[in-house]
Length: 334
Image (cartoon, rainbow, N blue to C red):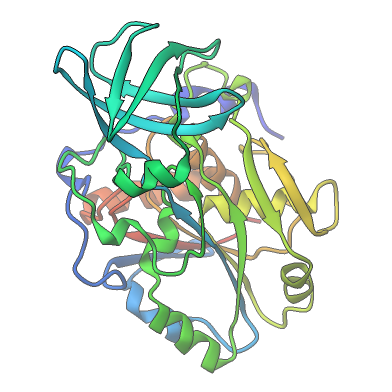
C-alpha cells in the first residue's frame, strides 16, 4: 500500500551534473547509449542493438507528431528584439511566451505583419493579428528546450518518423529511431504502429506542490486508431511504448479497463500507484527532468526504487540526460 510520504516531491528531486545535459545531438540519431532494466538487473547497451533485442511478434508504438517551427523573432516599434514562442491557437489569436520586455497593448512586427500583445488568465501572453500557423512556420524555427543553450535548428530534434505537425516539443524517445531502423524491425516481423499526442507546453511544467498528487497536467490532443488497438490486443510478443507521450495516449484509450479507439483530449497524470490498464509490457524513454510529470510516469511504470537506482547508475556511468540524451528501456514493475 502507498504511504502518503511516497507522494512527496522530495522523491522526485536529484542532483544532475550540468555536463550530463547534452547540448549537441549525435551525428547518427541511432547511436546513443541504451540502459536496459530487466527485472532487477541493469544492462548497458547501445540503441543500435534495438533490432536485435526486439523479436518477431513484438509490437512497438511511436508518436507520429512533428514539432511546429513555432519560434519566431520579432521587432518592437522602438527597434528592440523579441523572441516569441507560439503555443496554441485561441479564438482571437494565439497564446505565446515572449522573451523581451513589452507591455500589454503594445504592437510589434513579425515578418511583414504587425501584431498586438496582451495577457490571458493563465499568465501566458496573447498575440492578435493577421497571422496563422502557415505564416508562423514559414518564418519560424524549432523551439528547442530551455536547457539547450546553443540555439540552432538541429534536424535531429525533428524526428524522422513524424507525419503530423502540431507539437511545441519533440517526443524525445522517438528521436532515436531512424526510418531504416523501423524498416529493419518490420522486415523482422515486429509490428510498428503510431498514435498521436500533440506535446504541449505542459511537458516543461515543474511539479511544485509538496504532495505531487495535487499537480495538474495540461490538456493535450491524442488519437489512438482502431488498427493500433487491434494490433496491440493481438500481439504475440511484447508491447513497447516509445515515450511517455505514447504511454499516456494508450492509458487514456484503455480507461477504465479495456483499450478502445479514442480521439480527443487527455490530461491524465500518471504517478506511483496508478493501475495500468493498457497491455504495454515495456517502455522506451529518455532520462527525465527532476520534479516532472514525466519522471512520475516512469516511477509508476518501472517502480520507484528501481528507477532511482537506475538514475544513480546512469549518473555514475555518465549517461546523457534530457531531450538530446541517451535512452532506457524497462519492463513493467510487478
